[in-house]
Length: 243
Image 1 (tube, rainbow, N blue to C red):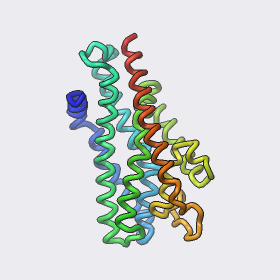
Image 2: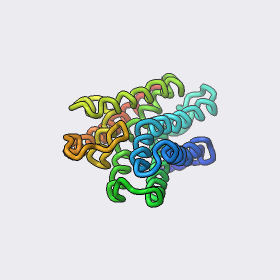
Image 3: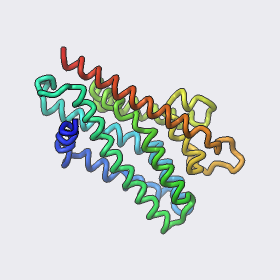
């Protein structure tokens, strides 16, 4: 399994996937610097990141993984390779997670460095905590985006995943809807964690949205979704390649 992951990583070491992982956090910071400078910088950066830029970033990273294989194999079944297709699929998920992790680390470092210069509205501890929760609660979208790209292509995956994230942001402040429609989990958890509403404004001091009891259920649902989607799509990929 480890060899499969290393092999997948090496295939994409110098591709546009790496550029996306490196530059999208930088673009987020620049956008926030222009649109929400000063005290609103941190709040704006986080909101632009998880509400708009990160969904597109994950979709493009996942699409890049699939499209390179399709182009390279030119329609030949991956079954021809002496590896269980399910393991190859899980390896792709792992490599996507690696690039996602790199992107998340860059964003976290940049936002904390820049906040020290332009003003901090979120404590360092809350910032790290918020970044960690964003990372965890977006993981389940990786196997989903890989699957969508394989089934309907990059544009199709973007047209499904991005709008769903937008709807999730809207539903994040609605009781229970955010956890039934998991695209809203991240936005909901950011309310008590870093004190930012989906609108990028501060959460009012007496708002029920500051209740941190939503964090554990949100994390649990996200992890379960990630595991289920990873296993189900891996099994689907194995059966598909065995036809």
